[in-house]
Image (cartoon, rainbow, N blue to C red):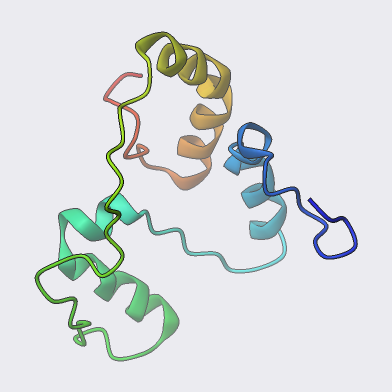
Amino acid sequence: WDRSVSSVSPYAYVRRGRYADDLARWSGRFDVHVQFLEELLADRDTIGDLYAWLGVDETVRPDVGEAPVNASSAVTAGLDDDLVAELRAHYRDSDAALADLLGRELPWRGKGS
């Protein structure tokens, strides 16, 4: 990673996963709208909420076609269960703070997580 090109390490995945820290700073200065990809995929009409927030025609829907446009041909394995448990524990407080800040459950957390 070249610090002269980017101030953010592209390898700091775990550190950058604490979304509540950054969102709290931004939302204190700007009107912020958070939309999760999982919400958009579950209900195509959810994009209308974002459009309404932006003040544009909320009835427009993008033509997304039938197939993903960036599908990977690589075969990927799921994460190891122990690693998933470790990551969930690591982010537990941060995820709870984010859910509290947004006033709604996070799509990647089950009810009561």
